[in-house]
Image (cartoon, rainbow, N blue to C red):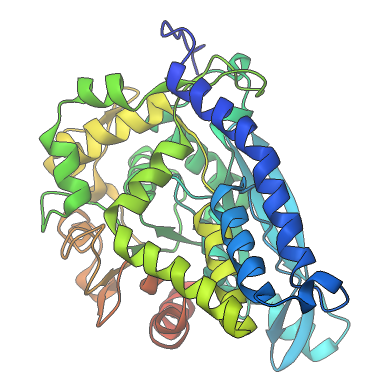
Length: 426
């Protein structure tokens, strides 16, 4: 990687954002204190008339204004063969922009140990597209029932010193190749969710063309393999504006005191604003319902709201080089499906993939990766026998429903598990 050479100077927007956060912090903390004072049954203030509304209003203010740090994985145990077994999070490989994490299951029961011994090895490649990898917590937890699971845990770019170098889409592909080699490709199954479907397919294609060992199977979920098909609002934004528009309007420089000060990024706070703008009325009603549930004492629904927005509001900065590469290569020039993508002098040719099974999964109602964008992988991977290709469109599922929630656990996962098992010991 080359040293990034930012000529932007200090980012006024980023600095204003940080100034605003600092100015709001005392009021946000005060709101948190008030919420506790007026909701704690042991407090005299909780006995006052209207205390429920005061507490609910203050908690809402606190949650709207607080900083959301990277959530913890919090995967401590999982059920295997009807028994709860502890799970330990282990960092197996660290690179400047990503950690390769293994979730290791332990048991002292002989039957459980024997059952886990032959479980397939899975690498889950999480998106680097705004949210932290913990967005796939449900995906990983479910897979741990029947698999040995690794996951890519991407690092917030504002926390990476400039001295670590730049990070573009080519570097992302190189990371995936290194992770596959580190784990061992011959017994590996790779699951890519959303954004990484493109670089994962590129990485495996390049490895296959070189004659390197490649994974036994690829599970490709809800990603823009060919963003020309059924374009969504996300696709239209990328094609409506030239690359220079993105460079001039959404790329900013990390200010002090972050370790990555001086690095050009697509800031998380801008991404978060974009997420909210896609459906503002839904988020408004969600917060109103949260307030109403607190007033009524419906703590179960209120806690569900907290859990969702603790994850949804936690965003990271993306390296500018990587973000702009993705816009250009994936969403504007469509280099992968056109067969014109060259990475470090090597052409990406998915037809080179042989001996690997392919399973593509899409959501019927996906408004991020439209119908057919993921399925397009089958048209590109002509070296894979048709008998080893499979596709699933999940009825009634949106983008997140194919890898998280009830539909994932009850409809998608059983098919993924069966697919991986089928090719685990061929």
